[in-house]
Image: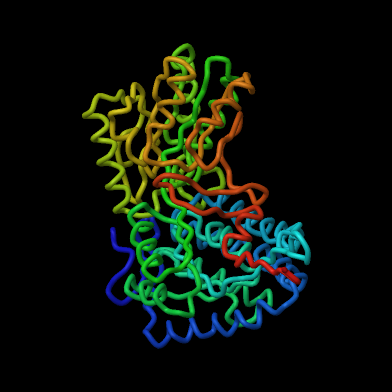
Length: 463
């Protein structure tokens, strides 16, 4: 049940029942070469297309996504177990992303005049070329388009190497681009082995690389991109702190913590994994959080009322279960769950730990599944210290009525995003990315557009 690829095929397994639903042959070296050639040729034409025409194609892509939303959401659910309601929401979010960049992207590429002594100077944002994107399975469409859409509006082309267990979703997305009448080569999908990825990174037709995935994958891809002297963006893991101070609106904090921890069955890099609660309210928060977690519907991901479905991969459930066992042995209090669910499928019981300390596995490591850890903080300063005591730095949340204090804490938090009185979400209006072992570079906002641009100085009549 752990297999997501063989020596010759990428394999899709329905995690709700363990049945194989698709197998996709890995492409030959010649097929990879042809895809890279299409991306390179497509780039020359695409970068020359006026940006308003690129915007119109993004609007068409939004329409294609909505027109195929049912099939795409169903494929996501079958391949990686995302509850169907959340899968539908993912497709709609992608359509809105396309529309937002169609409206706002052109202005982000406008030349910036610069004052100089004599003459005239400006900064132009030029595309780099074909971008290789190595993408994960947890948001099979959103993760791809979150990086692709800003890069495409800038005039780059995109070569997607998707996770082997969601290749069906990858090919449906490719079809949506075709339906939107994108030119050949602007968005390519390759199905290759790790050796094929290495070949693509080293190929001179690839201008830059982006990866969303694990720290281990990021180190490997980053090293290869560095060896080829190619720009790369890495969006890696996270163990996000969710801080709740004594004066917080407790009901709102609990509601946000439940969503932040358990959406997508807890398989989110920027999830509320470490719930750091000030000691004056930790008992009440814990009680309310456990009560709310018990109300979540666990089951068939195709059912509309399911909130927690199966984990995407059987091997990752085994890894999570070992982390849970280690945390228990280290002295945490198990408040609910704590084991694999009985019966068929790759389900894991929603789990809550209390009395977690900074020396325990669930504090120090990323737990990529439906497991929440509650940590007691003496005061706000201690909560801040606990939050920063991590090798990760993706996002963080603070719940308090003292906004001035929250702003002061935000200045000290070592994360790429800070959310005050609201749970973390990726939104095109703001940046997304991390620091420390959560990676580097940014997606979304104008930073996502310019991340894969050549910021070119043009200076006339310099004397």
